[in-house]
Length: 215
Image 1: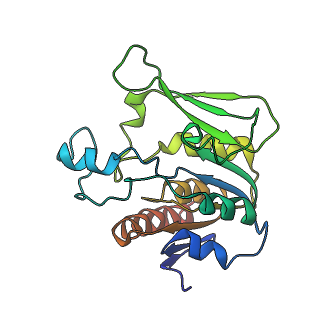
Image 2 (image 1 turned 45 degrees about the horizontal axis):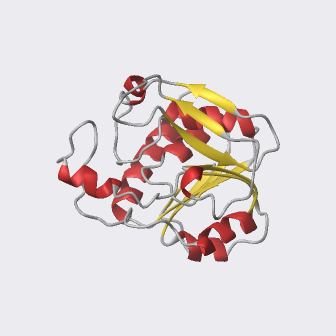
């Protein structure tokens, strides 16, 4: 498949990640860093709230209507040596027991939303926590209803990868993982099924790549 967009460090593909990954050889990338749909209707919530609270409203897109099927996770494990999967608590029936969970502590308690978020990892290492408030995360320009904070994705990469390794995000959304890779010198592959989000991701990544050349 021809990339939708590419830089010196990586390639962005527009399509179903299952089909793209099927063209990849076993364990061809060092790390999956991704945040799959949880099946909780985040896209519908953004549409119903008309883009409030930093969300962009792209209508009833239905991409978060259900979880990815097990075969998607089987391909993720086949093509990668290690994995960091945000929302791992939604996929425990697909994942094996691990001690290396990550916790994003959002710094608020007794709030209507969760105190934080969890990521399952394949690493046989101690659980680690990232303290980064919801208020700071909201300062990122939000282009996607479930967009992770840039600081969080950079922390994940710095914690569990080294410069020069190749990272894949099969659900790259608005491109945060790729931008973080560009900043930290990681090679990357991004896959996104929505052409709207591919266009947004391409613009973000291109801006980051050009900015990097200035330094």
